[in-house]
Image 1 (tube, one colour):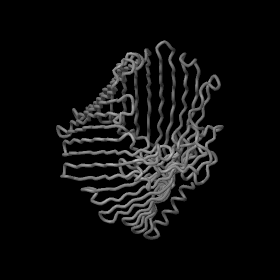
Image 2 (cartoon, helix red, strand yellow; image 1 turned 135 degrees about the horizontal axis):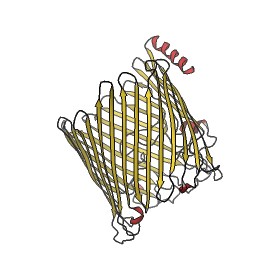
Image 3 (cartoon, rainbow, N blue to C red; image 1 turned 180 degrees about the vertical axis):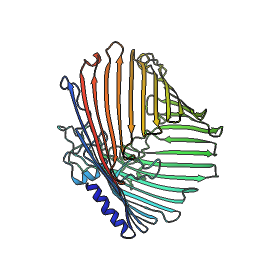
Image 4 (cartoon, rainbow, N blue to C red; image 1 turned 90 degrees about the vertical axis):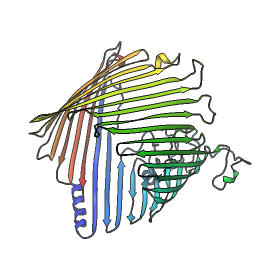
Length: 555
């Protein structure tokens, strides 16, 4: 009951005067085990154990606030976070899988210490977590923000342990804004990142080069009327893809050398976005465009594709006293604006949604999407001509009785992917039909809910046929005036390739949540799954057991 006593001590402090502490703490664990026949048929897909601790208190004293966030995990690596064996305390704190931050605030001034993700604009920075120091000052119409810290840990490579390694990367970002955020404003942002080539002794595996970049951005917003608004941003980046490349003497970019050294791998390019929105209560539309040059690098958005132009129009309307909602979008995208690639691809994107409340009991939702891609090559064996279309309709019917409330939902989805290439078309063409249905009933006299699901998927692709069939039943109840909430679910699945015997699996899952006190809650989820594979995988079998438990206290 350590968390409970922790909560009580904070409550006493809150009552002692104007000092107040509120928030929550949670400790949870995942535990997994599996066995297969024959032995080694399938490796474990989860770690044997995973522990998490989250603490989010906020200390308030008069006008002063101190939000604290601590979130740590026993797992210290994933697909985007490099493995650092025997990591130091500094590497532990800088690991993006952990969060340790303090954000004291007084009036219009706030300081950020520790883990943070500076979000300054759509083209500068907003998707790269870092560990360092930041600040935000907003006295009246003026806003000033800044950040300095580590956005990538330095990790020594080790080929024996399959550790690629990484240079330490530091980021500096600053933003100055002026105006009313609801009416009109102008923001100027600068960002600089650089890999420290001295942070590790050996070069990372895979020939990952040390990089460096600088960026300046000007963003603006104008509310032209109550209905019409304009938002735009332009940015310019100077980026060196390899700091080890030779210096470029006599470059046209020499005037920028005080910012960073100009090398043969340094590029200067621009990016721009703009959006025009018109919104009435019952209808509206938005027009968005995006241009990103081939050499433009948005330093705080590492996965943003560049060398493209995109235009999108998105209207919406509400009719029949909001019983009919329509919205959609149509867009066009083209890449290889620089002409540096052999092929240029164009894409047409379209989407439409309809939600109709036909009666008090019946609602229907429908969606259609169309995604086309083509390049400028006419050779039959090299050209790309693909179209992906998807249509989904989902009615929901609610039947209310004196003692029961039934809800029935059905979903039908059709997906068609067509490839016009004479060589790859027969392999890539695919058609998929999906049916999904749910039924749930809630008893009004007792706190019992029952539900059942059934789904079927038929897919034909690459000359093969795949069928997926699944079903499940579940029930949930509330005991002890709702303080104890157990539930039970039984599921079955069948997957089959044409010409092979099917794979089967069955899962039993039990969940429970217990509100021990008004501020203390314990949760438990346990499941067991049995897989029996067909002839497509040699007839092996796998048994899995999974347990998740956690305790949460609020104060």
